[in-house]
Length: 225
Image (cartoon, rainbow, N blue to C red; front, side, top):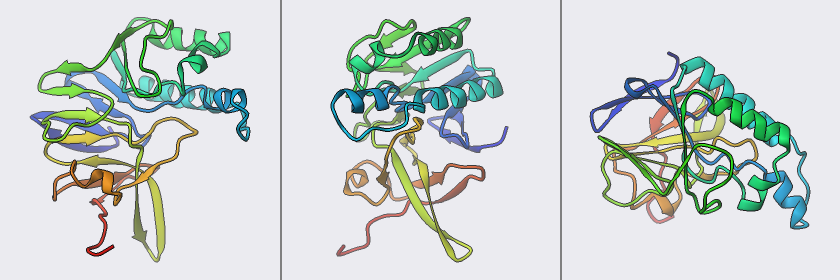
């Protein structure tokens, strides 16, 4: 399978070009920060509008990853919806689409800071999911081995053939993986942000997503910056 393969706490994992994470031994696909319904929430709050296509685009890519892997379990790692009202406001066609994706497989919604409570869209709802040797949760905790999380929407830059490449990125070290945001309308936090200083070990890698994955030492803030 195309992707960046690595081991975390003894589990063999693959970072996919889309930003999803696949655990072959458990036939498990994990995605984070879908932020479905973001355009609806912005319109509801009177913010500058966005074209209302992001949910369909995100679900199209998720369905492609599910077909590609044949995953029997899907974990949505928090902030699956831009807020609780956005989940309820999804058009019926998109709710039906989610139900079809859930059919015949285990589906887990992990609570995020944007969607802290259950939604009436099928699947299980959990604060976090221990699946030894790994644990799935929305926000990383310091000194937590075998942790899979999201929340920060990490992204990274690198110089490539005389130009700068900027992409959403997996951050990976010997303790944890922080997934990039999977949703279509999501910003990001550069890997050299101070938020990652106390989380990622010195050997951490950034794996930039896209048609061709690029694994590089995680870009960090320069001394004195």
